[in-house]
Image (tube, rainbow, N blue to C red; front, side, top):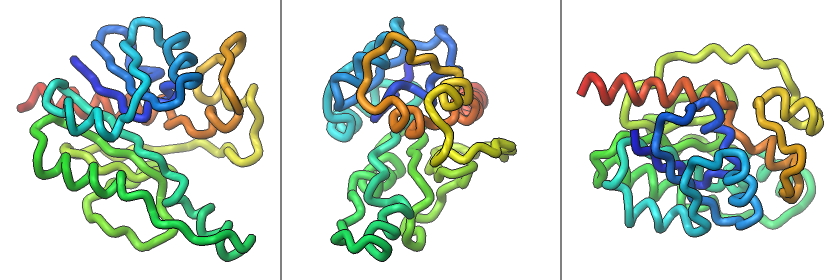
Length: 202
């Protein structure tokens, strides 16, 4: 399966996808992209604008995973404004643009992931799994998340064990934050498996 992994980070979502797929990852930060390449050397890694790459190449893959930036959507944004006096920011439009674009203009199976936001959900159709929302072109089966970890508290060794990703010897800024930003590899596999079943049934 040809897979496009957008806003790839270090590849938490991809960690249990195996090596049988042809995966192209797009990541804006060169240092994080380099870490991804060290972890997943068989993938093609592109340093660039994932948002633009999606609109230019959405019809060239069998499955697309997109995780546009979540900082302006997260409930922490509300805390920063109301609790600490930060200036409010517009929620990034990239999330809404990609959900609408893929639903209307692409025939490629896709999932678009983001956090549970501080505002009332504006675009219907998202499926909730653990701490994230997923807009998908296929039904994602229910997923039981039994994790009890407090991601705000646990440190790098525990995060590496949680995700099955070892960053020892890999240079990446703010390892703890990068690991905290990872989608659970188990959820990543759960969703890819659902996409593959959908492809077989089509």
